[in-house]
Image (cartoon, rainbow, N blue to C red):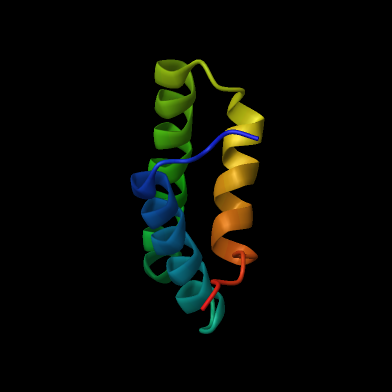
Length: 76
């Protein structure tokens, strides 16, 4: 599986946090705009990094999501 950059991981974390905030309140266009913008920024960055590293785009995105949503436990 492709190894995502720290930048991609951070961009996805921002999108996840924006999603949590948007979905915790009643829907408004303004309330959901940051989530949509963060998600679009993340998607553009995944495409650019996949192209630059010649990685499979879908696998790269999957690796980012796994790293953020289901991180490996750190050894002591």
